[in-house]
Length: 296
Image: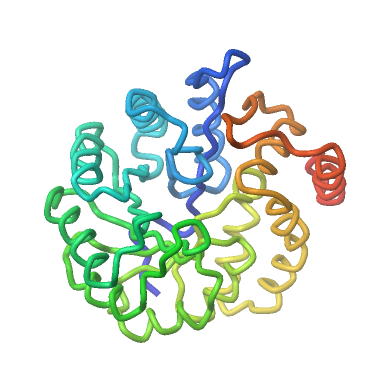
């Protein structure tokens, strides 16, 4: 099994805020360093978990620069530059490339629900508009209202710099169809921690993870166990981490992971509206799982 283009454990990094609701770049720097030191091969900056819809372009650009400068060559940085406006996505990706990042994450255009031909043309235009930057497609129909079908992914995989997909439809059948239609070097990443191990068995490359903020090294161990043929060990690790995978999605991402990080002493701040803090009951549920895993 060849090593995938962005590694095996990619953390979709939260965006820290200070008490005045400004981006806390100092904490972002410390968190990025911590994640790369503790199991992450790459970081996604300004994705869903990073609250990208509520960040300005200026904030995003500074985050790109801070995180890339922090981790240097120790890991890769992917940046969320997707949009439901093709020209905006092209411009954002071209700008991101000037920060020497390692790839872009391109979400399926949301709200306007383009047909499959429109989706193909959208991603093709972005890829051609910034050919020097590898691209990861991002299929998350629960948030976008549209699914990128396996046949469309197969067409897009023929474009040189479209090298991977974050498959967050929750469907192993979808992932299996993509695997059957694309070349082996095209990387399929689980978009849900809970499906990491099942997706590996379907030919997946790894995971774009939320839980890796907390258990990156354990995820690496699980994946390596599977690759080495130690299936029982991989299953045991997966079952141990399953309560964490579940509780981190007890509410809309990234609300629970920010609560978990704060419980563990990371001053990542609150959330920008329209997202809001976790309820006391759900916070207690998160804390319970963290204690059971000896993370608190």
